[in-house]
Length: 67
Image (tube, rainbow, N blue to C red; front, side, top):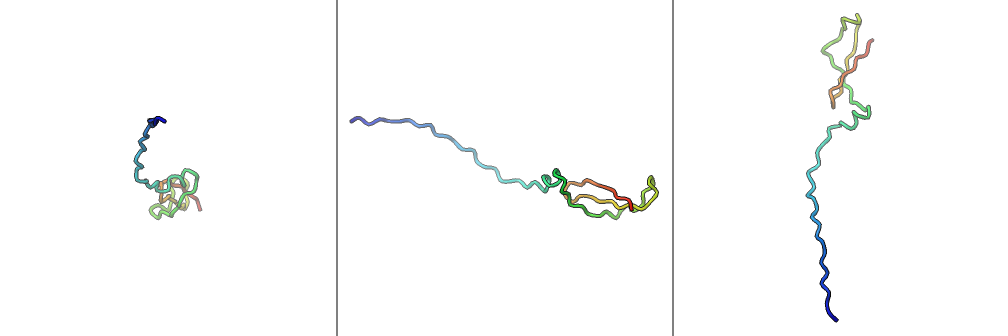
């Protein structure tokens, strides 16, 4: 019996890159911020009252809450 030589295709796989940290960006996109109180500004001139300013530790977004 004759031997058959079968040629196969060799597939080169991509080398995986080291994983990058996303630094919580996915959490902030879904509305799960990590708020911290900013004590630099306590009085709002436009509203005329005391306010509390919050800043997200991950993305830097700010929000203001009037007292």
